[in-house]
Length: 292
Length: 149
Image (tube, rainbow over all chains, first blue to last red; front, side):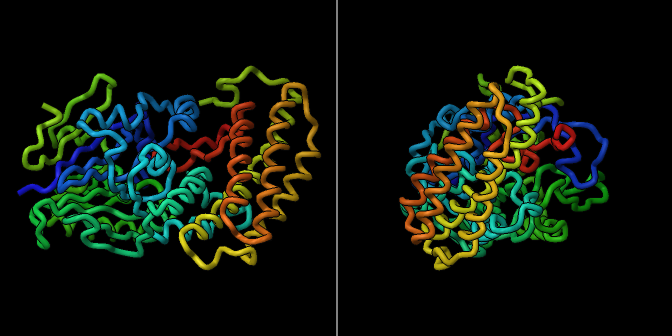
């Protein structure tokens, strides 16, 4: 029996993003449409998400003018397509601390947030470094730190140290230290609830941007190509990719890169009236399709 | 892709010179605010390492002093006057937060002026081009912008 319904919810996109930013070494290979998405997980009496996107009030205008970010819509509009309101969300797994993944926590007033302790502690550590190390702080918004303080005071921040199984029934968190960021993590959903699940999904955060990161350019001769950016190591990214592939028994379509525009080629999907795509990965018992 | 004046009226040369000088001040204030916020995160999350003896408090104080010196070392044009007021207000608020942190990391006495400071920095970021609260060179939306600097 399928435990959770799973959707990839686009909330904004960039029409022309350089491929070199996505796949390591892909210089002068043109651009690609880059969707911004978060994951909606619904079932077992819970509504969970993987990441929360960014706060348009603070970043939207800059993103729109600098990078062509378009069609941003707030979570209440995006999630309504699946019959969910932000206040319904109970649990949120933050894969890492970049503004475009954890920059909108204030829109989820009832959720408990999970993040790797290392992601926070190393983030704070970098703040203590000399100005010449400021590259290490790129992509981090000080306002997110202030919001994190509020979460902690309200008892809604859970710092995870390493892997944690069954954070919700059948949902595991896996640490990926020193990869894309200091304390990235990915989320595994064992959607049949079994310890040796044959229905496993992995939500990779920014450990994977594209299908090429998982399989390379040549399907007949697969290889792992790390993402275009890491503050940790490319070695760790490659080894983590292999770990994720093993966890889905080699079925790489079950590793979901949220910035991959071609998910629509693998799974049922539709485009909303706002021009944003919903991709449906799984439906729990009794849950109607949101894309048909 | 040019961004220097996107959303802003063209700047005169004197104001451009102000922007070039004030950016360093703005970045320092933003960094100090982030340092203090980081200490609050440690405290709120129950870490034991976030007290006033934490070296980051002293580092924040030093950088704040440098930023204050920078603020009063800039030549403020009419176009930049409001921006400068935001910087002064942010520096004052951060100064209060540092004083509170030196007395001990209790959250509210530090957090309240810090929020105030952040709001002033946001105001400054809207007032003139070249003052972003987040560097967008990283993260999944980040096309490198170094050529525009």
